[in-house]
Length: 153
Image 1 (cartoon, rainbow, N blue to C red):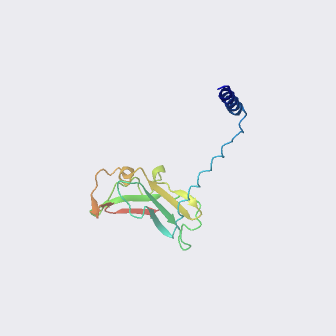
Image 2: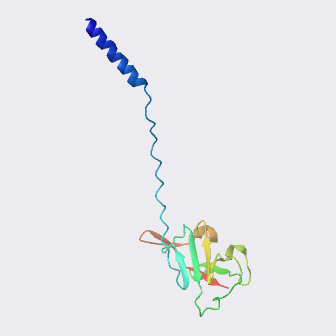
């Protein structure tokens, strides 16, 4: 029995000694950097009018971008460009925000780069024109303004 007590104490001392010994310092792996956010696809701006989204909805935002062709009077133009725009319903221009010779901030286009300007109809096309419930077509669930015309000056 004395031998058993000695072994028991010896195991106890070894247990205490190993439990109290200094553990190696473990450093966690540095956090991995987040994956890079993919760039949105660059769409080529074609000469003339470009719209985004491609299938406009009267109840959503719309961006119209214009790139002047070399043959356009706006090619090389460095002054301000204004959109003369309105909604056409049943053959009648409606909701035109400014007269032809009136330059208002709402209709001023933003210069994107040389020979390229854009305008955003936001928060929605309807709200930009303040057109209320102007008639819309539903084609396959897609709501469209019957017709919207934009001229640049």
